[in-house]
View 1 (cartoon, rainbow, N blue to C red):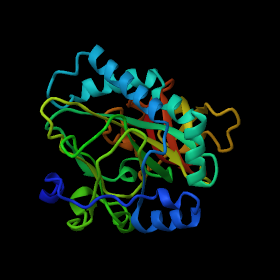
View 2 (cartoon, one colour; view 1 turned 60 degrees about the vertical axis):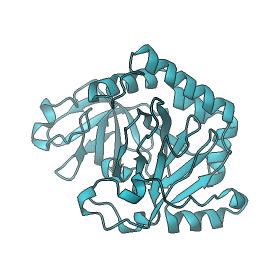
View 3 (cartoon, rainbow, N blue to C red; view 1 turned 90 degrees about the vertical axis):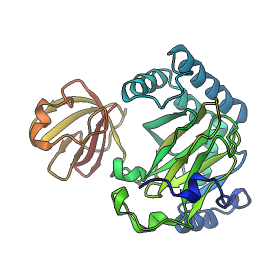
Length: 304
């Protein structure tokens, strides 16, 4: 599904700000359940967010990707994401006491962030396809936090969400119902954050600037009470199971997970790995992965 003309043109209503309900968790939960998002202005540590943005840009420049004027190729993006993840930028950001306290307040308990963060570097004329996070990452029961790493005005684009679309559930993009009239966006500043339900339909608006890269980051935390993600290295794999050495110091779930035709086995490029070729795929012994699960059955396994 292409971005509709109304979204691409930027002439859409603004996001509802939720700052006034920070002391009323039941109201926040009701808004999130109804609309699928919460938008907060100026609640994150602005200087820390800007410092993260500067380091992201520095890495982009060091890799010679700042002046291409074109969306990154899959290989360029993979190398860039690997470099940024090695620096542990998002982990350091969300671990700051004031930022961690904000997310704990919103969730009602300290949250566990999972290594499914994504640095978004959008060149002029670039955009992001309409999508739902849960469709590509099922089984985690997670909330996505979209964080602008720089001021993002209407020309630079930024995040747009289709209000209430999460209530339709997850489906392939070409099967989504009409979304006209549901889109909302805003001009963003460092310190702002948008929290999204995992099934909320959203997109990145076109970057209509002439020469400015748009920088943002998605970080994801599991909802309190959800089965904890398993992160670790594959210790054994066969046609019916994958054993993962859990990195958690006190794992509470089995690390041997059964796999079947319903398990989403993903490659490092995002493609689905057929169950029939699991044992010869890149999901091999020693590979670091993240897995969602229901009891001892894997819902998704993805390389990290």
